[in-house]
Image (cartoon, rainbow, N blue to C red; front, side, top):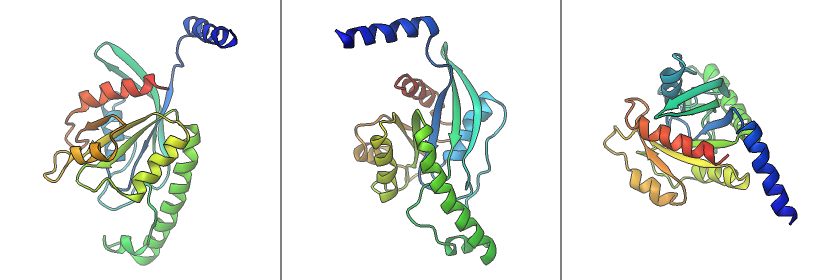
Length: 212
């Protein structure tokens, strides 16, 4: 009886006040998977401005960055959310990895330190997330310790997940392999760079928001 009363109370409150106006959605994934590229594509589509800088150098995003309000209007539906773009998650960061891109040693060490702090910050932000979009590089092996760690953290917190298989414009892209690795989650293949399959992504984003 108590459970029925609580359920009825929630429905009454929902009808009086509606759903929460803004959902907090985090964009997570390994370095260079295209998180910021996708975040930029969304922000440019709906706010007219980008959220961050993109480059081929790993860990270009080393601090959590966000847009307080992104409003999507798609096929008669509206979604307003706070977008949180996070640094790439890695199990190990070596300053020598930056040297390969022509970055000087002192700058490489600074970037490595900031990237490590960024990962810690990203994990801490999980406690504030209501849903998460995991962006994976569709040309890379999805069975990695990083991917398992990210999803494990989300499952432990019972946070709804949408997986994006990015870079489908590249020849080596394999969405089916990502689907086989994570069959229990919805997966959308797209190219953030080319804007391919963004309609399908937006529809999946609405479904994700409904789970919060």
